[in-house]
Image 1 (tube, rainbow, N blue to C red):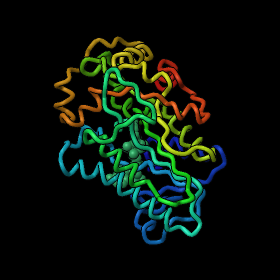
Image 2: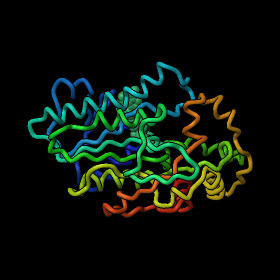
Image 3: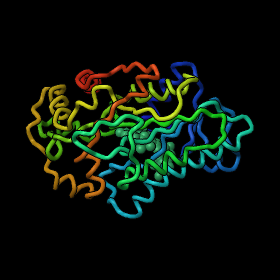
Image 4: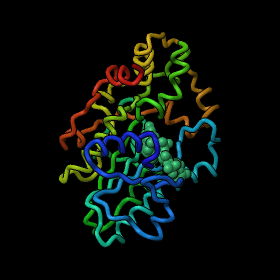
Length: 289
Ligand code: NDP
C-alpha cells in the first residue's frame, strides 16, 4: 500500500528520517517488489513491515455488491496474511510490524466514546472486516513487535475523502451529510504517517493505537462541513440528504458517512505521540491553503 494516499506520505516521512523504503505493489517499478515475489521468495531483509494496502471502500464508481465486497476484504485480509506469513517465515524477522485498520471497529453512536480498550468488531460488515484484518496480523510467538493503528477519516491534500469534497465546497454547494449530527472521526495525514513512524521507531509501543485527532470526539459531520467551508471562504448551506448518500453508495456503505464514532486516541497520547494538527481548523487551513 506504499503507493497509495497514506503510503506516499509515510514513505516521504520515513525517507526524510533516513530510512530506506521498498514497496510491495501489484505494479512493477523502482524500489518495488510484487506480492507474488513476496510469496515465493520471502521477505527481503528489513527492520519493519507496514501494511497500508486496501481497495478504496468509498469508490463511488464501484457498485456495492458481492464482487466489490470480496475485493474490499481480500485486499486487506489476504495482503495482511501474506505479510504475516512472510514475517513468520523470515530467518531474520523484522523488529516491528504495523497494520493500519479503521475505527469502523467501534459501533457508530452519537454519544458513546471509545478508547482502544473498548469492545467492538462484531456487529456489521465493517466491524467484522476490521476484526478479520487485525486477526490476520497476529503472529503468535513472533519477535516482531505488533502495532495496529485504527484510523479515522484521513484528511490531506491530493487524495482521500477531501479530494471528492473540495469541488462542491469550492462552488458553495457543500454541506453536512444527512443530519450532520453524526460524529466525524478524523486525522490529518501527517499525523497518521507520524503515528506509524512513531510506532516503528519507539521500541516500547505495542498493541492498538487509535489514529484520530484528540479533538475528533468533539467533531460532528456538520462541524466538519462548516470548518471546511470556512477554510475555503464559502458557505456550507446545502445538506446532502441521507437518501442521496444511500443512492450513490448503497445502504451498507452509506453507514460510514451517515453514522460515526466518537473515538479517543488514549493509548496514542499515552505512548508519547505529539499531534501536529490536534484541531480541525488548523488541519483544514493546512490542507486547502
Ligand atoms: P489507497 O486507496 O490510496 O490505496 C492504498 C494502496 O492499496 C494502493 O496504492 C494499492 O497499491 C493497494 N491496493 C488497492 N486495491 C488493492 C487490491 N485490490 N489488492 C491489493 N492491493 C490493493 O488507500 P489509503 O492510502 O487511503 O489507505 C491506506 C489504508 O488505510 C487502507 O487499508 C485503508 O483501508 C486504511 N484507511 C484509510 C482511511 C482513509 O481515510 N484514507 C481511513 C481508515 C483506514 P498498488 O496499486 O501499489 O498495489
